[in-house]
Length: 557
Image (cartoon, rainbow, N blue to C red; front, side, top):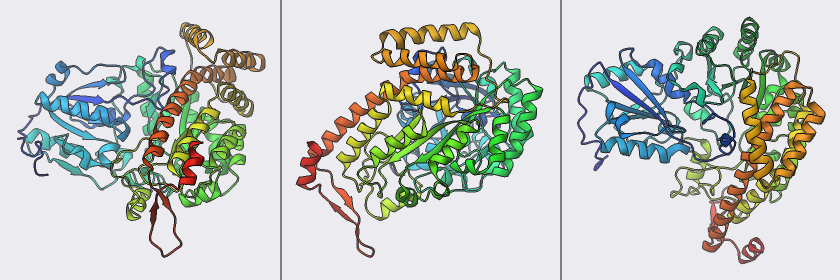
């Protein structure tokens, strides 16, 4: 990389007593962040940086490690100057925080290293910013990287192709965390997913053969959390918890025994594919192990769009029936939805709204299709000449990073309308009530203990912010009345209902913010007449055309 100041920089040995500052950049606002809800609860962040504290456990014992989570901490010059090495992990969505952190460390003449999903998917974007970039999973190779740093032979780029045996990965350094700042704790059981969804970079970064920890290994991590005093919910962060369904079944059976021995200190939630509905023994085992919630990538009610993106696991049985089956057997369902597939018809937005309502999924994480680097979708868009090179790092609520079949203003306007419909206060809270009606908790499910003082503090703040100050206070109080009337004496539904009431403060307000942003972008796209993609018959070359004048008139009203 000619002209890169990092390449001209000398990398002397750091010696054995290395001081490492680990930095977790903050996340921009998103549906996942629940940022508006965090104004009500005392915690400052949803989940901790599990990747960083796992790498911390891989570091030599004689290294001194500090962690700064920019979700609630300030990164000071003194912190950077204390360190010999500033280590960053991040996802692509954190890229602005990554850049700021690495640039500050460079100006203060401190060595930098970055790994994680962002580095693994787009190392070329990070090599000009960081001294050392690690691509891939470093579990089995980090000892070698550590020696290179100590001896002065560290490489600019480590490209680790081998997938490590995660059953040898040590217990994460939970002791580095400010535990009281997090709403949920994170653990990981498996990496990888067996499916072939075209837009997904999980299978390209972590592989299609799910690798799992042992059940004893994971319960050992839970034991460590117990010793540190953690008593709130635990997020099993696997991208598909049931990717290796045999190992997952063995785990939940062991988790059930562990929960009984320890008097059910944790409630779990995770992500899984829709074929969980076809594995009743596994579903039953998860419920007995005290899983309460599951996130499922549903994506679309359009059969053609699911076929296009190769999400065949969603086509094996009726989607609504599968969701209702999971709800009725004890797991409350969250869902991911996408618009912008080539096969999406013009009425896809109305179909998505109808499906989410019928499925009774309050937390419907909707977004516009993007083509992340390394994915098959990215390669297809590149081959067809459809990639927009000025948008190399996509965001789910900006225009996609490729030319779409649906005219872009129509896609943006439809997404805006869909979000405003789904998160209309009355619709949202009615969907919460519907979801609680469908969700049938089982006798084995027990909530994590919530101190009375904590609960009263949160409820009073919610009543003030949501029930007095908010514009949706009427819908809020109507929901609270319905919740207490129906399930005031059912502690599990009452508890989840309170949490969902709080979440409305985020979803309703954030959907409005996104809608305003989409409106602005839509007007810009119409103004500049962005080309769109028109599929051609087989054997003919792709075609990019301008939006027709008649379409423009229709879209702008």
